[in-house]
Length: 539
Image (cartoon, rainbow, N blue to C red; front, side):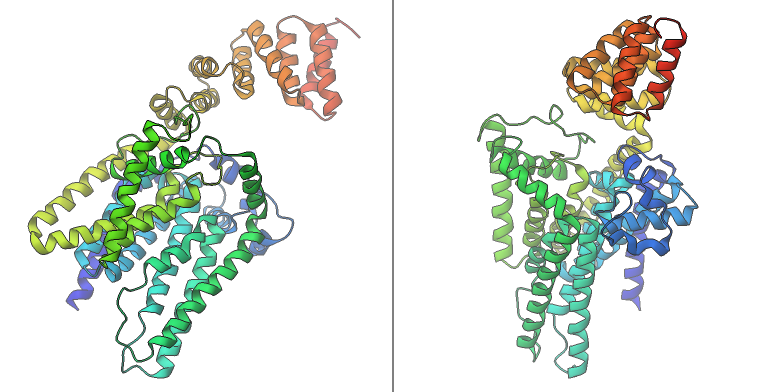
């Protein structure tokens, strides 16, 4: 009874930590990719009875990660619409669930209640996890990691066997439950995010180093093999069914070459994730080119330094694993979980902090065993260090989470952290424009334009803001340069209005006609053409 009460108390502490650090995020807005994945996604608005349609050949909206989309459908139904509070509250629930499952798995792997609690607590409040939790679009990592953790718990349930005196039916039921649980939640993890493909490697790392004393160990080994092989087969089928276009795109990117020279690029990416995990002082929502320094050669000083750090980290993990230490399992888990996003296959986002969520669960095992060992030697000191670390990381995560309140706060902070990031300043300009702060928006877009004078999106956004502020001549100049790169109907319509407002109705008529030739239904071009002709310049 006392042990159960301690277990419940530990779970309550973990839930309280999640609520304390991220509770305020319930009041945050939809930001950045939330607009496309949630607000403007027609699939989210489907009734729950249409959930099977997410797997249909012709889907509506963005559903290639169907479990994530289904979770948004549930939130939409619960909130009676696009209530951001419900979506953020769900993120907190999924994060808390992942923390609790990790706590249970760590108790089994680490073998120490205090160590498991310490590792799970640090995972609960680590600032690097903040993007996955405070950002609705981070739901993919929350769900995928939660499912992978449950699948791994089922795997441990399977491979640990049963009591020597257990009956044959009891052992058979245990094996079936372990196999079915691992397969079910493994597939669900894939349906949330394709990086759950690392599950077999993580499962191998969690194989008990010593054979349990059970009379049916060989059969248990067969059951474990069935679970792994079954998942690999299902993973191949599910990946092809859900992610075939993504796989094809990845193959094409491999053919076209990396975004930057290898192995320097991958080493820098892994090194950056490791640095953020150990020292999360500088966090950002943007690690695109400009915000993240790309290597210019196959090996340079920064990549060599990162490579040494990663190699030492890997060597430590292998040594500890050889010594049958859970800390080694956690270190290798961290590296394996990052491989799908380590730019081995060129990936549009160079680094995204939410990609480290599953990896951080592995690092929690390492930290947990470290504190378990420390508690046996100096219990009071170990307890104090854990409390101090949780408070410090929790304070940092709380401050960091506030950045995600709305688009203006998000991109103001990101642009300040990345003064050379074109996308950061561009997104800040868009956010300020939407908020009606046009002068501030022009300043942000001017900075983006200084960094890249030929970026078409920046040209169009700056032309739009200049037009709204009455600087029509500059709006025409910027719009003309954007149209010269690519003449789409919307850009032409915007340029036509700028020309009309600048007093050049002849040019405006010609531009509107070009827009209508490409899209006869363009309302902006129709209205502009009618107004230009009404001014009596040309009929």
